[in-house]
Length: 223
Image: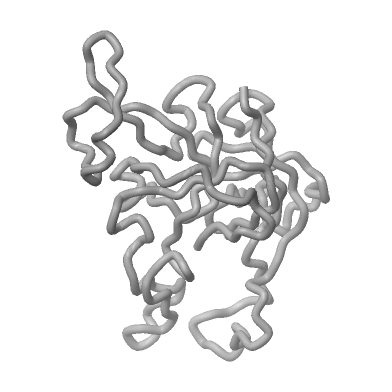
């Protein structure tokens, strides 16, 4: 799904070219992941809009340019830490998603539109402290101690960490860097709609009421 901006900083840090494989591949950004900058060699196979090539670094005679990645273990001490404001459903696509489809075969919600980064390949990044919510499909939802409602040890104010793939988690042992707290958990929320068709009335969707988002205070370390 996507990141929800509740009471964020006034403006995002900016829009930056993302790693191609993380926009369209198996590691596609869902929105709300913790991301950072890394450099890639120019020229290379990773494509970008024309304006991206206006800036580069030149270490030891090898020209490189910056890209945004959710793989926080791509370099040691990744900084700055930011939230990716992109998505693959909801406002993150042009036409949203559908359940049912071909004679009820689609049960998870098929994406009807393109990823928000499809046109430019760029990722909007938020680095300012503030109140955000992230869809649970973009979090670490391990059955034992992940960021989900069944975690009985999770309470208001609990520290949140980022895994090596940028997923929010309350499990410090999964942190990409030892004991780096990126935010504090507040609560779980539904999608906020009072007119959503109950799951029990849709054959393709079964089970009790589901929470859709985790609300948290984002305040990543700078150094």
